[in-house]
Image (spheres, rainbow, N blue to C red):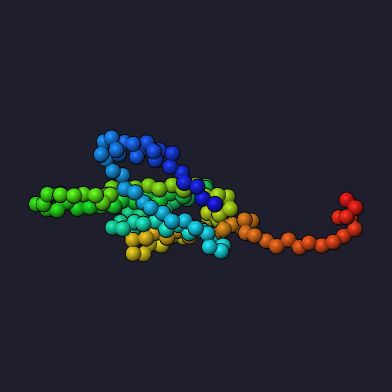
Length: 136
């Protein structure tokens, strides 16, 4: 149903190790429950007004900005929390109804709900008997 689409993730990881730069990471949980597919993205400290969710064909993109204020007159001793612009892309399968994506933000978690498309829902097939089936 969903595939990660981050072709440069390994390159980003290596450059972070080499140059000490950090790009905000956005952990995600994804699952299907009944006729809906859910994504939960952790976005603590992110202003929901900066979050944008877009769907183009089968690509779902979540972007936004996590800000961190410099303490006036202070000096950083540790600065581990990621900040700045972030983007996550997910390749959606054809079995999802991308025309009816819904998103909500609560307590630092962005929840995206995508219905399963009608043609992808399981359906019962009746089995009958006939002489034709037996004689071919």
